[in-house]
Image (cartoon, rainbow, N blue to C red; front, top):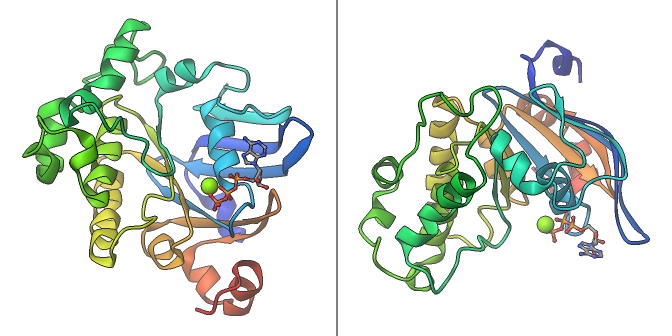
Length: 256
Ligand SMILES: Nc1ncnc2c1ncn2[C@@H]1O[C@H](COP(=O)(O)OP(=O)(O)OP(=O)(O)O)[C@@H](O)[C@H]1O
Ligand SMILES: [Mg+2]
């Protein structure tokens, strides 16, 4: 855990958050940080609160207690569109593309929505060169570029995941929240996904990656948190965690 304090400045800082669904107490004092330009992975078994953490950051299920700061500004209590305008994009679990819309319409959705709400705001927002346009997303994901006129429902699982990531990029985020992007994908597509995440990091994006695929997370992440019942149970660089296989086995129920 010593490495935690020597990491570069935080883009996202989550401090002791407590998040509920009604009376159901899910995140029970969770803290984590995402340094600028890094990939941070969040591992945990089913139902441990990974999606709830993503929802807490995106403003969909705000915590009742605790702080979440993005580039130093408090975001708890802001509506989701405001958090998106600050530069946080979500690639939701299960992709959630719009099946009856075309690939092009899916990609254009965030830009038209954000434009209607006044565009990106804050540092790095309006006025900076907007990096991602339809043609740049198509260049990054040629598979979906060939299918812009088709309905999203006709894409394969891998293509739908590329579309979900492309759609998030169209909002020009600094931080991309990815909730189990490898779920249900063939190993060769998971490898492609890893390469995409590394490329996005090299282009200056930061990623908070929720995964059940421990291999993928350990391969791409700069730092890893393991959560159980709404709390961080262990954390470290992939190398630090690899050096303690018994710890990983205990917290994730897996052998590495
Ligand atoms: N909308 C909701 N209302 C009530 N309880 C919920 C709701 N969504 C999730 N929960 C509960 O909160 C807990 C954490 O769920 P969450 O979806 O965050 O887990 P997860 O780690 O993302 O799991 P998975 O790996 O299956 O996606 C679970 O016990 C779940 O049943
Ligand atoms: Mg989940």
